[in-house]
Image (cartoon, rainbow, N blue to C red):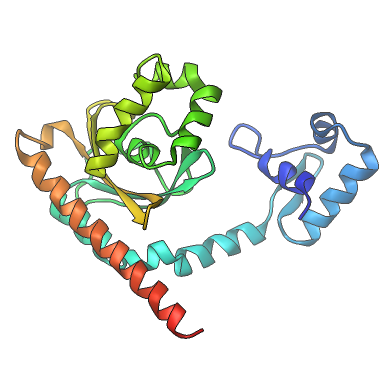
Length: 253
């Protein structure tokens, strides 16, 4: 798929669920013939569909692919029933997230039996790297070169999120999270909610994070350590399952 076709697909979001050819022509700086050729290709593939007299919307193939991911994603498969059990034991909302470019993408949300407050992270929603335990623990495990790139690009956003106003301070703030492999935050994403997150690693490479979001009123002094311990236990099980699957695949070569 060409870069231009990808840019067309990436242009769809909640504020722009339907796109018109003229809009895409202006944004991409290409001819009418090129845009209509690209839209036809995407429509034939099922990635886009025409909305009568309005333009184009995302197509049914994306729904089909989403189902396939739900049933076959290795990270989800490795999690099994552990996430539901973790939600029941902690009384919090469990989030399984992965790195998605410069964002964090929630691929599964498991609710407790008596959810009190909804959380911002939900399946399919991409969130920034700089706020909340779920994202920060991933950020802390990115390579230094990547952190420096993000700093130079997003310095104002990073500082606005509460990090020091200097690269070395930014890196120093992340080091304890990297060493602990965990992060705990209060009210950084959703007011009145605590996030307790553990990094999911493939060797030295960060895959994503596993976190529990709990109302602060349900997290009395001392309980945070108990909840985080449970998150660590489940994260370790997920990593072990992924490693075993990798070793099994290698043995079949």
